[in-house]
Image 1 (cartoon, helix red, strand yellow):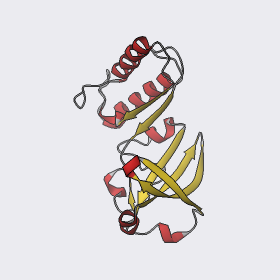
Image 2 (cartoon, one colour):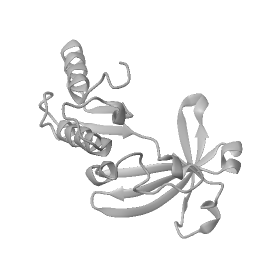
Image 3 (tube, helix red, strand yellow):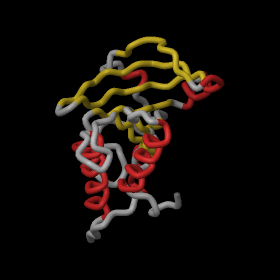
Image 4 (tube, rainbow, N blue to C red):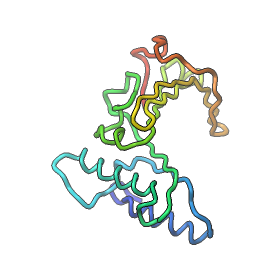
Length: 169
């Protein structure tokens, strides 16, 4: 679907169609960059439109939308440009802090230049429900089989992984 051509309703219709075709309920979906979704309402500031999309997605995940049953909903997003050389935490998602506030879990992926060269990255579980989680795990990337392997859990106070070379995403 073209950018700004998809909506939460489009996703719900696709899931319903898949359920009808397969004869089973979809229990998990991954939605890439819903910030590009179109919305019914227009605001002077785009961040309010993004908030509407995230509220509608949360309702869909709870089973309050057209699908009629809850499902685990994973949403991807990019960090704002100012996080390109910083460690991304909650609040790093582009355009609207509402995305983090509305989301039940927020995780960020960060990678220094050296980690990228070595095939490693840091997954930062930044928020669970209404509190900061502060759990970081160093992972080895295994893109050949689309997998990650845990190397170690990191003490988030350990400054060596949070450098000006760190790239957030």
